[in-house]
Length: 76
Image (cartoon, rainbow, N blue to C red; front, side):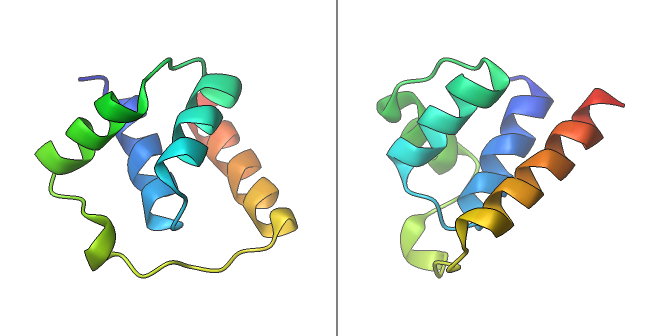
């Protein structure tokens, strides 16, 4: 699996985003095309489970700020 894709999935998962939100962001912002089923399989293979991850409440502004930092990090 692509390490960059897995790192992005982990970041968005740790933010508490829902599966559908993660899939949409990966496709629109990063060009990774996944189905929700594929995402769930990837999460389970790597030991990420929603019930173990408390949701972080973020504002839209905080999410965009974090996403811009992620994009800058992966471009360098």
